[in-house]
Length: 133
Image 1: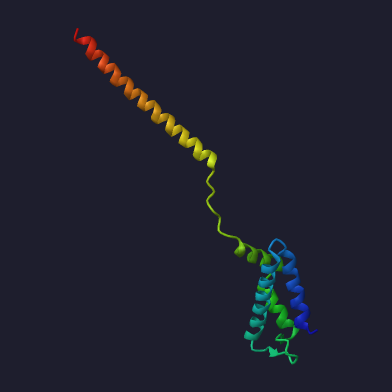
Image 2 (image 1 turned 60 degrees about the vertical axis):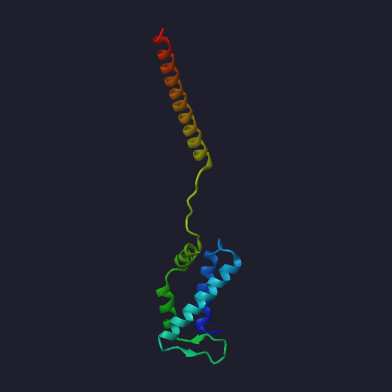
């Protein structure tokens, strides 16, 4: 194992430990993406050379690897960002109890107004009928 392998594996392991709430399959995808991102950042420095052993990992001095990992930040913070990106957007939760309560009050109000209207009409008819005699 070279310096890259040791440092990056330790970093990825720390991120993995912090991602325990993410399903295993998705966690593996996130870690693979993060590993590719780290390798890409090292390749961007133009100082990294391909590892002679075709494992695809760059061969880089320890200080370059540490510099990239420091730029990424604390593994727990990286995991928190990855986990936050995985959460679905908050959905509006409608409480059926409140909705039902509001509906009942609307129905009671409509019934009371209807009874009031019927009462007024009946009172008017009564007054008209009794006023003629």
